[in-house]
Length: 446
Image (cartoon, rainbow, N blue to C red):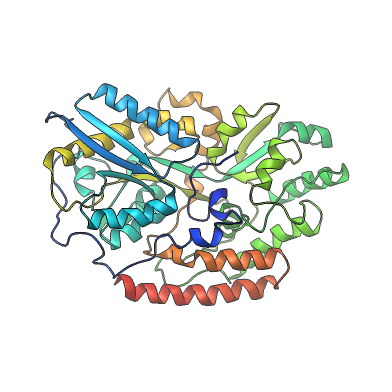
């Protein structure tokens, strides 16, 4: 089973055994805020796709990192767009996220940039600072979009400095999946998923009493959206809002890793679970729970013999918070302006945003409020469980190069979870190195 695209320290594929350290290096800066973009290029003006497209036939290049199960869903949406707008042909190229962010700056520099690029909110500040993507304020103004059209957190996450660089397509928060068959087997109520840490532990104790390891955690993946959600719930952070400090060695992070290591120590999880052990055990009716994003809704629905449900993430800390990411449309900078392509690209973004209910087929919660309120979205009952968490969603700050610190966090979590170093020592060492990286990035990005 291959999970869809990785979000920064969120998706299980990011923290696989072979690629964990490399994945955090995909957005290293090169040359400060001037970056690869043409210095004289100015963003196009206009009505941001509000008036449709009435120019000559045009072909657009659209890049994204959707190489998993969500890729075919996106291609279906693009096909729908072309059927409704025959003057515009869209060629979709899906590239693994790590490779995409290596190829995109070079493509911009050489004048071969795609017209549209999908990226995560965590990528926006870096690519904005490097002039890989251009401000998209004309689209926002032309469509009369405001923060009221979106959840506040995702709207803010699409900005860098004083400009907006992206139009959010979706929101994907972390939530709880529960295996009804396993819960019934151990004597827990399959209709009442846990909402607090105490309730979660009570069920895990029932599982243990029946010889079931109820929640598989792995040193290779637990530092992603699972541990981070608990960190946020305890008032912690991964990167400070001003981009000067990591929260790796702070008490919320230490408490989070300590809790998840205790699940191994107390026998609620195997000692050496694989990076995707939570899904493998869950889908084979060997565990009761996993915490992951809504992209696993579709695999759960298509797995034979799996009786499951999903719900908001339990409060493992002091307040309701959850890790979240978002796919966003951006416009890469172009060496030479093409007014027809610029107009068609903006219309494409507007149309896709308005018709994003179909993106829920990939398990994603539409970012646009009007789409979430539509009758068409109401049928996605499992995805709507994740919609409940929009106001709790915690997005990364708009800090260029913040993913450069990921390898330090990943390595420290692995050392701590496997007992090779004391938890506080491993995390505080990572914080010291991460803070040095952020200091260097402040100079690098200006």
